[in-house]
Length: 138
Image 1 (cartoon, rainbow, N blue to C red):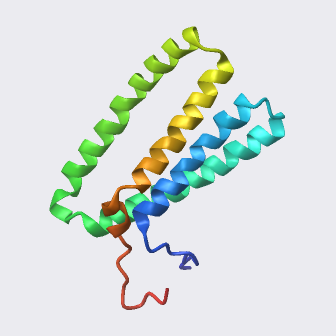
Image 2 (cartoon, one colour):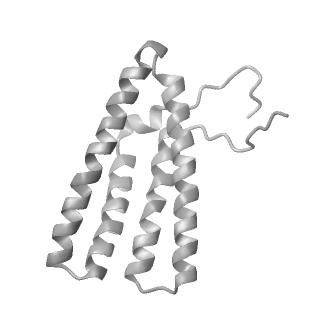
């Protein structure tokens, strides 16, 4: 049985960036002291957004990076993602000693929103579109 998605976004990288911006929801909800069910809904929405972002990014990667370069590009991408994690932990640990928990959570949410907005300001981001296939009605 073949399953097909109904929604096929055209501007793949823009969708990936906006959907990834949803990761600001859980820290913002926790910083504002919202009830646990609201924080859980925020985390669920962030997870759905992250899934959409990953699918859009992977589709753009497969459609726009030549096959011969995909291995090398994937390795650089993975290394960059993994190197940022310890740096983020270090900065967060230092911030916890200087600010309140609420301040750190709000700063994290604000950084995610700022990164999302700044990425959306890059003109080339909007030029990476989904390649339409012959049998693709949407």
